[in-house]
Length: 378
Ligand SMILES: [Zn+2]
Image 1: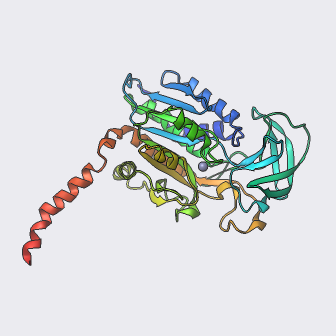
Image 2 (image 1 turned 135 degrees about the vertical axis):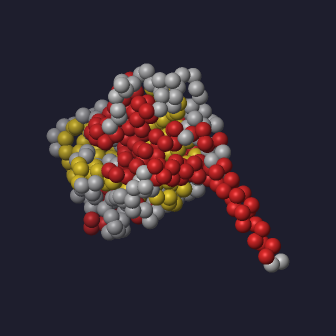
Image 3 (image 1 turned 30 degrees about the vertical axis):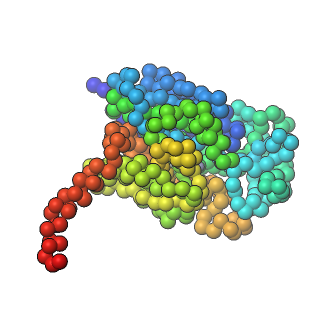
């Protein structure tokens, strides 16, 4: 008998496995190592490619996936706003945390390049100059070493009812949703064939994703779905009301066909399980990699989790600098729903050839059934 897949248990395992790793733009070593381990532990099903930028790209195949071409790709980024020394050695905030004055007096944790803890400290001074946010830091024990970085000092993972609370949700939760979906697809969909990419340095302007596009690491024709955590307040989304089919971001609206396909996936889950809920929203709190994919001429769509305390800025008023910083949070049931949508998208990816088919047929039926009434008057 084939072993059954326990999504909840496996999600808990991956949450601990991934969120325990510190990360910042250009300092993703620890979480990249975890991603590599995940792939190597499943080498029969995952072929791991590391591109020149250090992005991790998986080709995933079920037992009978064989030589089938991949049908869809999912991506998530592995970094989060943090403090990193610039080329001039000055400690700089990479990623947007605003207004930056709120950083003063906040506690930080230092890490070595490989993610080992290297002491604690405090942000003493913040200075915005020439487009950079420079910070003066106090340090506890330990001396700076090459490749070192700092994160805001919050626990990596805590559960609070339905909430997953952590120093980083954006976007390790996106990565986690893909990893759990991969495991579920391998167990339950033996003929699946799809790709997943884990990118670097999104918070400094999609730098890893742009390099990935340049390297042609993912076939140009493959529809690509970006997974994100996006500020709930930026899209009238409700944390706990289900995963989000993200129709666009602050810059662009995404491919209507891929978006229709993702909505159909969510609808078909709902048909089987009326308790399942999802949201369809324009999430304008930030821009995401799907915009970069789309501008590269790809068919891009997006899914996301509604995020609380986006970039560690406490809700509800990001302008109130007296609130300092706080851990981010998402809903556990939203995460579960998001994983289900990804798994369904893999299973139904053949429908991407013509996602409007059933809607088009419905409209034709309507004209056939109701059109004659137009002749009642003329
Ligand atoms: Zn993000």
